[in-house]
Length: 311
Image (cartoon, rainbow, N blue to C red; front, side):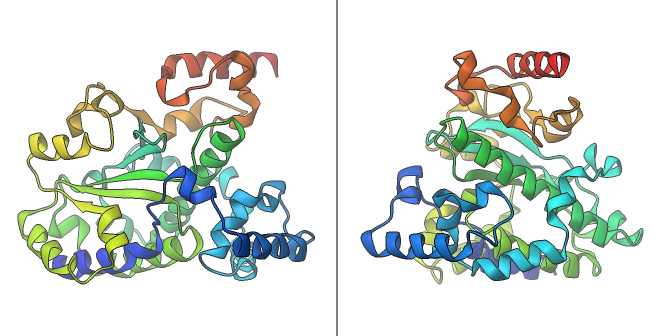
């Protein structure tokens, strides 16, 4: 069953990622520009948020699913309100961590899924709620990227670290887990396509590396380029990661120099206006902060505290 899960992940990943640099992502040819302008004109009265009307947002729909389909899905699933929902039972255990930035300026996010007890979610009958929690995470992530663009940072996508350390058959490959995985993969690739710039799978069991060797020869060159599967030897994959991510931007768990990253739950807990829900309120450029990847998190916390105090 674990083999099936690995195969599903590899087969679905092409819809989630594009592997483009910032310059490649925002560059369009003359024909695409005409299509982009026509799309913007046709949908200007249908798009409920101003950020949806910007070219950098609409570009995704020249390369993927139709935007009408996307808007209908958001409406049916009440996605606009998911950021207001709270999931305290998941924040502490099902962690999502901001590590730093890669050498292209993309945020690096680690998902220590080996620490997630997904079997317990399924047994408790909470699969739908957990899926909702993941939707919130993706909304926070895409919102974070939009904020970065507004602040002038070259951020259109994120580099993702899937950390499999601790994954086992009992808690991660239970029969009831598979339908939940399929749903997560389905809406991720359909409605959040292009979110990931590159995906690194870390601490993969040795046998999965053999599967990857078989699969990667069947995938397109672009997919093989953006997806890397690494084994359990940290000293080996740390060297491989350093090609794209400076060690100063990674925690020691992945061979970096940081003692710890920043948990998304910490960002949420700062208090309104929450950093992820309303990062624009920080006005970092006005404070002469132009390199988000290079600043210390305590400095950001101080700025958030000042904004909250003056609100």
